[in-house]
Length: 180
Length: 115
Image (cartoon, rainbow over all chains, first blue to last red):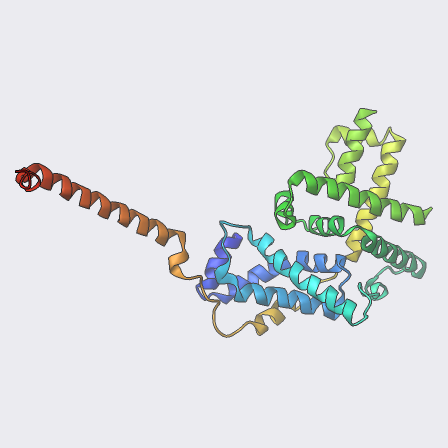
């Protein structure tokens, strides 16, 4: 069942169809939010709000203009930017510094190493220039094609590739520096 | 050398490697080091992914409003626009046909004004 069919079903009153939409996109959405540094309750609130807004505005979604995934992540991005601004105004640190809680390595030394690596990666992600970071985050969502990332970012596919290349290179070097 | 650059670019972009490039990694230290550091990056990025709460979909469904989402106005829909344009074209064709037939069958109407 493709997205368009599920959306038509939802608009016709079949709520289970929307549930399938949620199940299809929940993982990539949480992945996206995790990369943004949103964790736990903050990530869940934002993910719920994304789907609620998508449901309410579903009648205005036009498949001829954009893929559903592009449309959904546009909503998520807008909400995430709002959340970041709000956190900054309230003086909260963004991203959340709660990686330890989600680390599941059984060996304590290994667990500490992974947690330290994750912190370094989060710092390196924050240090990326805004444009690179935004494009890179979308590129990490497997459900989005390069063309869809280009549409979200308002640039050419070649520019997307170049930004992904530069972002990954910077992140790799940041991790490698600290490993040595 | 150019082969190495091409392979390292693919690795950097996170693109899958063809078989030939994968076997090259086992014999080229420079490329295998690059591949190793990118796989460390990918594993670390994977670890940052936030897990989905088990009953997340249920919680979303319980928060949906009671009424269904409103559709866009029907006159906005492409099908209705096409139908309206087709109807307008048919009306124009009909009017022109009537005017033509009137001119052929009743020429005195148009000549009547001439002295």
